[in-house]
Image (cartoon, rainbow, N blue to C red; front, side, top):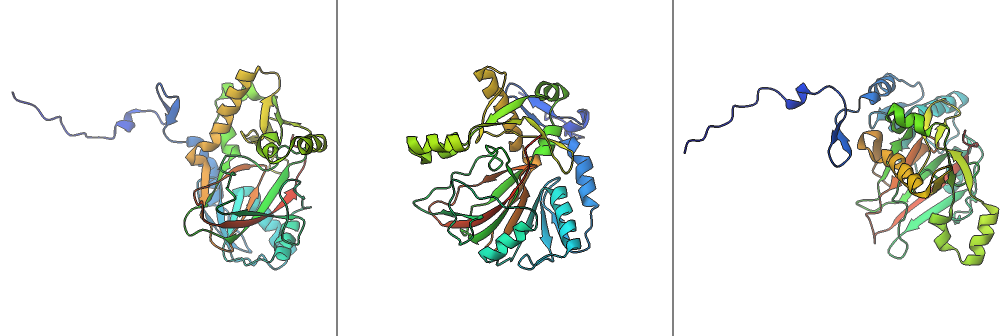
Length: 320
């Protein structure tokens, strides 16, 4: 029996497909170029700053900043430029910043009033600075996509995280661009979620750490709150997705099954790799993120090794 070898391919098979996302049936996942990132990627690539240099880490989110000493007060011009850079890149990273707790708080306070977290204690001598100290007996449970304290009536505008002790491998933090997540939705889905509101509650994450009496007391102090599913950033004017599986309880006006399905669909947008950047920590690295515009995920792959970081959070405004 004679077999004939197939003729060699002469072009990439993708050349016959329109430049669009293609669904892999029956799995409901899509492949192909994420074309709506191009304009933002090009805009960011053109930015230049007078007081520091930036190195972008991904298409639309994340940049490493060089040339600033965060232990020193910033001039008014440098502060204004850094704030604009933060709004543009959504999360900024700094290396070799050996901040004391007081210097950490002083840097964060230049961007607004700082919050005191009701569940995570401060052991730093600075009430506004919370310490995440993980090791063999204290697991890291922050490994899910979320924005901080969305269960508060006024969630954080931003956060400054300082790496104190970092495991030799692992413990990275990932960030997702929730502007891009919204922009990538179909027009039909955007119309479906326009005007919807979701209930946010601390109980799923922090409730298991409290006994019944303490849980009731904290629920009275911090009752569930309602925020828009699609938030408009008060400084940039851009729309973004504002639901997460950690703190979003349900969407008002939907049956339970429909609410769960929609939250899952929207929360899953953060999982698209093209919307993300990933930061590998070193001792005295700093991450400064816009908690309104991004979600983050702290990889919990370092157990039983030790990872210690400290965070100061900037008070924001009621989501609209």
